[in-house]
Length: 274
Image (cartoon, rainbow, N blue to C red; front, side, top):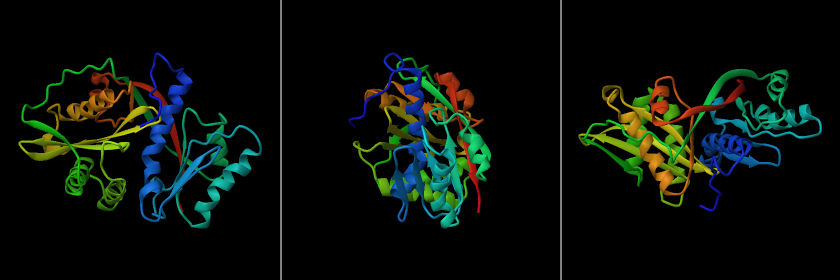
């Protein structure tokens, strides 16, 4: 990849915040980019995607940076495609969103605050890497559709996710494909050669994003989640990346803190349902 890798030593906090914002946006924008029938639009002041699916997770506006002009008119123009198709929509207001009062403006247009997403960062050259994981744990990279199906099955069990929602992720990742030259990488953890854990890596906007870390209930509390996080971090570092980001669940927060992640910023999610 030709993108410039971000680092704490060379980049300003504002640049790093924008990169984290872009990586988080890239994770969900994949639905619009790759799902059959999906749309992804990148404009001068915002990005938006839609899939036609009846969930605000799969239809959204990202990276809105309005600098001048009639802000309310711009907001309504971006919402129009979703309103016309009677689709729910989410709108992410991150650290690089503008203007500062964008959330208030969105509420005036009928969106409601539904979630605050905490973003954590880690210096890939200062990780706390000693992790006690089972000696019979093997981690492999997903290389084909059969492995991706295994990944999806473990992910659904680990997150206790609805089957329909899990299938959207599988269809998206299947459309992206696998290969060393692609921004997405997926991992499976095998305990005694049984698949028990998964994680994903998104190399985008100069930082390494960690997503989808999950362990099936029967294999938890053995250090597997930490090992599944470190595996993509090690690959990202080997590829020249210096900064990693993720959004923790309550269950995973302490694991990430032990590895070396710290809270860095927040993304506020607004949405309306049809």
